Amino acid sequence: MALAHAILALLLDCPFTGYDLTKTFAGSVGSFWKATHQQIYRELAKLEEQAWVTVEAIPQVGRPDKKLYSITDLGQQEFVAWANQPCDVSAVKEEILVKVFAGAIAGTDTICQEIQRHRQIHTETLANYHQIEQQFFADRDRLSNEQTFPYLTLRRGIRYEIDWIEWCDEALERLTNGE
Image (cartoon, rainbow, N blue to C red; front, side):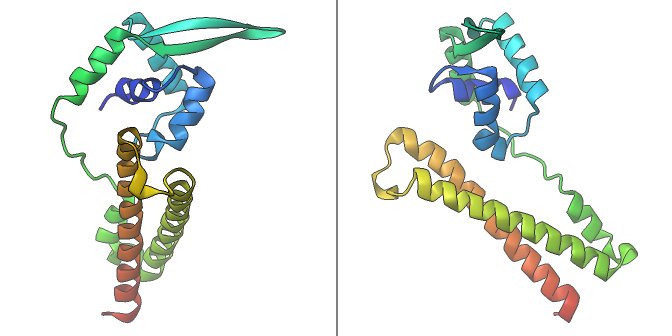
């Protein structure tokens, strides 16, 4: 997936300033597609050149004008064409797995500490996802079609974090107790 498509996906719902888009990105698709503030702004400029988005300047007193980005019909057509194409399964790139794979060199204590650190991170992320689930999808039996799709991505994130926590527990048990 190109960053352009992640940005277009967010703009499908409503226009955003670059700043608001960056914040929204981090709290939504940023959970599974990483991009920096600078990357998003560079991509917005490219999207404007391709006529996939339009920009409206909003004057501000004593500050530079805000730029409000909206998806164009051409941008929607591009997004639909992209969405209708099959996608590849992403390759796994997990640094911790390389460390665990060669863990005999680093030592059990070092690897266990790293696994415990990762477990904590995944536990915190899972708690955040559960909070989002309660805040935005509390009545899961009555979700609209538009709500169902983001909910499904959230559920994938929840299952991903649960799986990592379970793997960390399994790895720590095996490394500390030899089972």
